[in-house]
Length: 169
Image 1 (cartoon, rainbow, N blue to C red):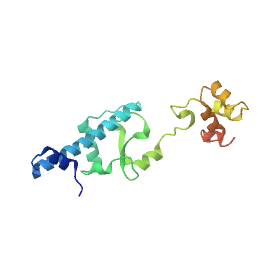
Image 2 (tube, rainbow, N blue to C red):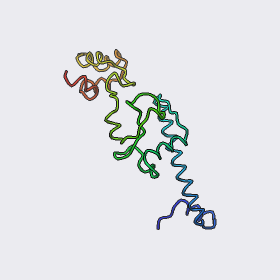
Image 3 (cartoon, helix red, strand yellow):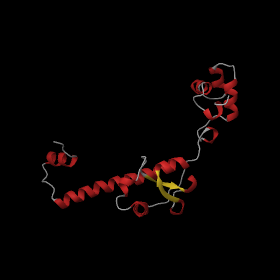
Image 4 (cartoon, helix red, strand yellow):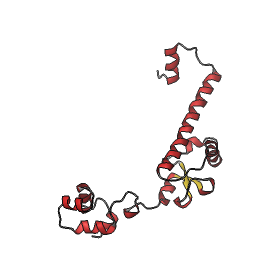
C-alpha cells in the first residue's frame, strides 16, 4: 500500500487523522506552493537571461487563468503540448502588453537563431572559425592563438560545431 507524505507525518507524529476540511486545506496549500515555485522560477530564469519580468504573483496567475482557464496549471509548461508565456517577436521584457500565450513548440519555431556569433557565449567570429578550419597548425597552437580549447579546435575541424560555417568548407 502506498503511503503519502502526509500520512507518514501523521503516523510518525501520532497526530489525529485529518478531517475533510483539513485535508482540503492541506491540498490547497500544496498547490499554492507549486504555483509560487513556478512563478519564482519563471521570474528568476528571466533575470538570469537579462530579461525584465514585470508581474506580481497575482497578475501572473490572473494572466494564466484568463488565457487557459481554471485548470491552467496542467496546461502550462515546456512540454510539446503545453503553453508558454512568450514575448512578442522574442524581444523586450515580460510585461502585459508584450506577451502572448502560445504552444511551446510554436515558441521554439519563432525563436531567434543563436548560432555562431549571434550566440552570446561565442568566443570566436566566423572569420576566425574559417581561419582555424584551414590552418595547418596543431590544435595546441591554434587553441593558444585563438584563446580557446583544443577540444573546441578539434570540433571545428571535424565540423561538429559551427556547422553553419564549416558545412561548405
